Amino acid sequence: MICQSRIWCRTGSCSISRREIFTGETCIGADELARLCAKLAENKKAEEIVVLDLRGISSFTDYFVICSANSEPHLKAINNGIREGIREHAQTSPLASEGSVASQWLVMDYSDVLVHIFLQKKREFYALESLWSDAPRLNLVS
Image 1: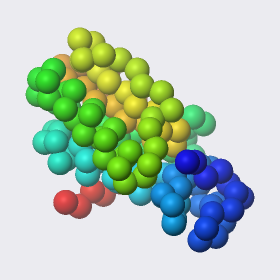
Image 2: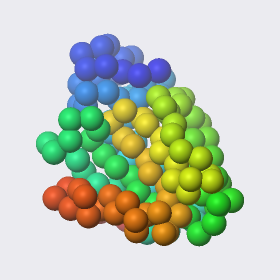
Image 3: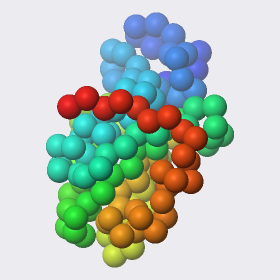
């Protein structure tokens, strides 16, 4: 279930972000969702995990979570790990998913958080971190 701004939740008004995930008792803001996606990627041994804060510079999302896989099966495992973890912790699924294992780039759209999982060569080719170099990075502490 998604909380929209100014929609009542059991614990109060969900107005921190444009959209927040309602977990049954509280709303998870985009910042927390991005950090959770990064942690779930780390749990699946994703490499070079970066979270870009796009608030104020993007009109379509607040955060990019970008990570690398070392093989196609690893790419699929990271994708499934994030998807299942978010379903378990936040009772939601991506609004859309794009890409395929064969394309070596998978994207999950959680509205305010876009998760990009690449094989390293594709990540270097598309260079999202360079394209969005003005975006601050969230400090991720393991």
